[in-house]
Length: 485
Image (cartoon, rainbow, N blue to C red):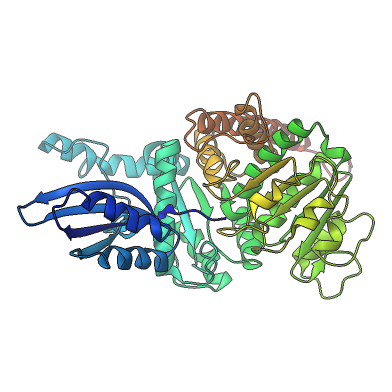
């Protein structure tokens, strides 16, 4: 069952009689309709009345209205105004730009801007790679969206996506010291998106694609990775997959199972589901079954999109058919990134002993976690009000910190697997209620960054070695004539 939370917090300014029971009456009114009072502050006291601010957590906007109505229904009480505390956080936006250098004197201006800046421009023109050293490119990421899949709300467009992208940028800074900026594109044409990101790319050291609907997100990411010399990372895909894999590593430790002995069901094969499957395959599970809205994906299913054809070729070794209910009996692991309330208690009861259930649909999971906990050994959700929250903020700040520190030109599955292992290893002694670290654990981002940087630098050294061998071969071939051949 959902509980009132800070996402729907309000503060009501109330005028009430100055009686000894006023505070208790107000608190009871809030509790009677299911609200949770978090603060009671007296703003003003008079002989005939008191003015108080009552802060409450609610379940929804309608529930917040019910709390307000309950307060106003008390004798002698008048609700002056109500503030939605979430909207107050967003007033004027959540991020800003600050100069890193002092601009107090003419000398400061001469070095930071004209005429001194001209020398830096000329240096970069001679050696474009110096932009990574001498500009914000060294520590800056573009958070790019077309607004076609905003959270779980659907196609809201570029402007409505801005609060999410601002929040993402704030998380980058808070958890990894990365400067990120929202780039909300007023187009949902794949070619326009790709070309726009390409022409903006010189400013950035990495591209974080966000809230772009499948299947367009797959092509956009793949083509940008081919055309750009900086890492391109679709967080809805790979960020989710990294945290899921890290959590699964620890969940398997808790139940004493090996991935290669497990049958895993992934429900939802969009951006997140496809990436989860991609990272699960190297673990070599006994079987991996993917399910979408049309049922179990198998090689004989007609009309498969190319992205689903790849899934069909890589999964379901027994050729199972049916729907998610047919996939679950005997399964060791369920990972849901799909839709709310798909499963029942019987579905979880029919899974293997010591089952693992990751019901990650947000805000309402595939099954009520309270029900799942009666039948599964380990349960995780995407919610903050239950144990084991699968939250992308455990992954993407540290991943980009590592990529930027390594001055990486791309991102590989090996880096993502290293990131997932780093997240898992932060939890020294996992238990059923603690398989992933807190998002506020200050050791997570540095651990992920170090793991990603290590792999990136190793891959870079290998590429340099290969290139050196090719160059040496080319030099050796100089002067060889057709007759020699």
